[in-house]
Length: 358
Length: 267
Ligand SMILES: Nc1ncnc2c1ncn2[C@@H]1O[C@H](COP(=O)(O)OP(=O)(O)OP(=O)(O)O)[C@@H](O)[C@H]1O
Ligand SMILES: [Mg+2]
Image (tube, rainbow over all chains, first blue to last red; front, side):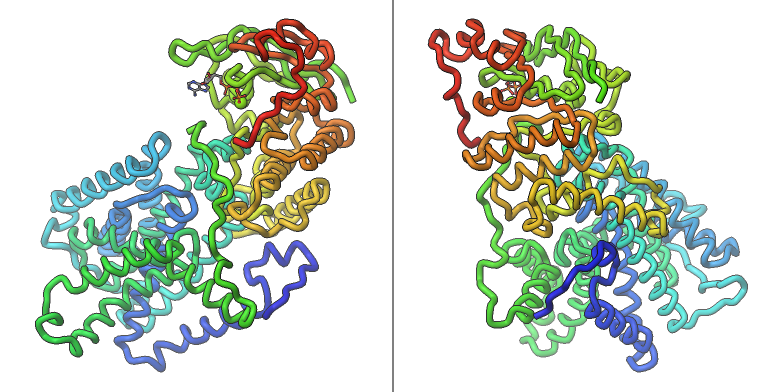
């Protein structure tokens, strides 16, 4: 069991709260740095993909998990980022600059899509984002002169100011660096006034407002940052797959992204990455398991969707805090070993506020 | 401390459909006083607070605060001017800790733009430290040390009320609006609340405009009392004067005499 003595306020402000954090995250970083050298290439590809989805998940987590605004069209922002990146790099722009531009354009689109959020919430906002996603997909299909329509678009290799490389290892490290930067950026926002304003909006708009939070400004900001991260993920996935087409950024992709944040655990940064790991690892696990299942079941089409669906339902019913919630419980169990009691995480329902002002 | 009017409400009215929730209400809140609105359920007291904090748009009338006209402002700008409030039904950030809730009270006092927050520059760091120092002052003031890292969702009602008061104090307001600070509290907690209200006025020098049903508390802490009924002003004066006013007694009881036992139960 760890006792933390707080001697200065800095301890609460710092990202690594105690030596345990430094140790474990250091270890994680070391493993990720070594991974391409020790793991088979296929595994590094999976990790790269996980990092990319982690970045997008982080963006959606900021919007849905921390600001309480749900988007079921988030893949469209990935699409905007991916196509911007494809077009700009094909025009010979260096990779980093194209990347920044793609993020900026996604952010701008995000801010515009966020406008309905200033008026509507919940399911209505979700529908507005869905409608937007359909529009984006339609534009990608129709604007053939630029997007290549349904035939899709080939994406070049990454060009770091003249140094062109298609090495998966370099790409792995590029993704690793960007993942770390994105995570640090989000963590910084969350520990500053901006992040607190997001959380305030999520929990009670009315009192956020009366504490001086400008709802329009922060909702738009949350949408923009979230879309920028989705755009970043989209641009990276374009380079990874070397080919993009409109159907990659459709409703199915959007739902996968929602799965990331819900299964990972709404309202936690860890959750975005747990969710991404889940999203990438489950199909692998299912295809491994297929060999052991009776062929009638193993060869059924739609087995994967079925398993996803069941897992999602199980989480919503039994662990609304997602994988992160489970993780916290297991960790607490180990920390408290003999003292853990069952009701520790029970939500108290002693008082429920009324909805009168809403 | 300078005297004079800090807040002045003139001929304020609001209608919800056919219902005149507040009609033609005028009053002033002076610097350094506790001003209390009383009245039976549905009298329009909360509505007056909501009009001042600009959650509702008045149908007519003016609200002036510290040289600014509030009627043309957005709710978040009102907080920026230094008006902080609590809610009748407690509006805390449920999934956050007490500390995080109080820190949100510092929102209007925080500096730095989005990019500085993103990079967490040294000035932001300094800002966070300063915010924390102020929050710790309030925690000490309200004896909340024990609950600092507890999530609101797990706190008893009485503590939530205190946290909400603390969050409003973290704004370092020039005027504090309290909507029924003692409702749902037991006798001991109500007693604490009375001491805090006194201290907020006398030690922190923050004037208070509050809505309250507990007449014992009202008489104990208020400098002036305004009684309302059906959205209209019934009486204005010292607690004793208002309590003895025949119209006030009639508003509460129809006829009878004693208003001191009228306490609200937990919502
Ligand atoms: N948003 C609204 N829309 C419609 N009617 C409203 C609204 N807010 C308040 N009212 C009505 O205005 C009247 C005054 O309500 P208000 O909440 O101000 O009463 P109150 O004096 O605070 O009463 P209580 O002691 O019960 O808190 C009530 O009849 C109420 O139903
Ligand atoms: Mg009321």
